[in-house]
Image (cartoon, rainbow, N blue to C red):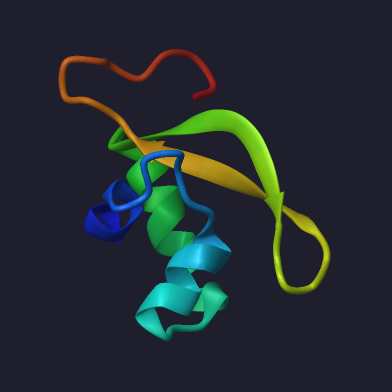
Length: 72
């Protein structure tokens, strides 16, 4: 998942990653949550529409030199 998110210079949503990897978004979201919890990805503050018309959080790979801060 981390490598796939890194492919998007402007960040990626769980829905985009799921589509790219031909996986269910229901299996991708928990992995994205794990990456967030371990500080490997961060919020961009942006949201994008997914296929259902709802908006989804956009994530970016966090540089190793940047520790997690607060709610990011």
